[in-house]
Length: 310
Image (cartoon, rainbow, N blue to C red; front, side, top):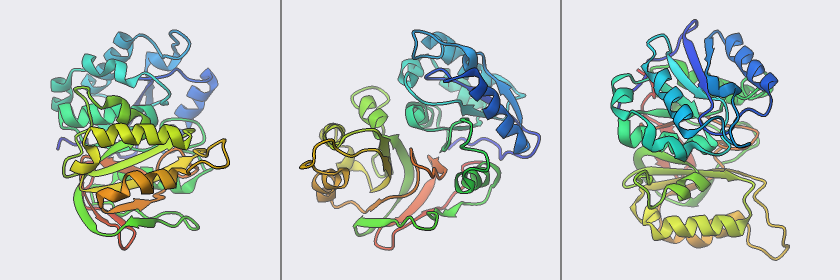
């Protein structure tokens, strides 16, 4: 896999908005200040100030061009998404994957950014980091766990080793067993949306990570059914389930998300864990995509055996 360089103090992070626009301009400035407080220089893309149609940070062409420019710019050492929201799949066919492969850099983000993680890995052979976007608060002192996980992944050329949850959050084994492979996946809504496209997540022989937010169990059921019909669970080596914040039903007699997963995915008998603190929760552990990891579901352990940077 292509890898970006490990970041060090003074390196430059380019912030872009490849999906939705910022909620406020003030939030953009706060995010920049928080990254600078961690010792990095920050370059803000034009899309960080744009809005198009009310829910996009510019046209697909503008957003794709800016991502291409950040990878081509020799003064930018890493690229980070400002936020997720909606719109990343719109730009996948507009990216210059050959150029990106020749200029590998660490790319960071989550949520709607799942589409970019998948395309960059499969089309440019780039290892990326599923971690917090450049939103104010996520990188400040309000959550030391998230910040420390991110900084270690960004700056260390040593394998991350075991991803350990913060105190009080236990990882649960849903299906016993062991599996090895690259970690792929991300937000369930995006993984499902890519099914049947040229950018469908290639999960064959890999560890599939899934998480989501604000989705009722029946909607999770629908998306998991789509992936099951696409062969995703039959092909993967193991399954890592992250946080499912606010994914409860409005009906008292409904299945829970855990019920849905147990009914639909567990029968595939792939080693599977639940409640790794990564995704749209209070905690968001950085997970390297496209690098080798070992899943000991019986022991409730995920061990990353390779660094995401060089």
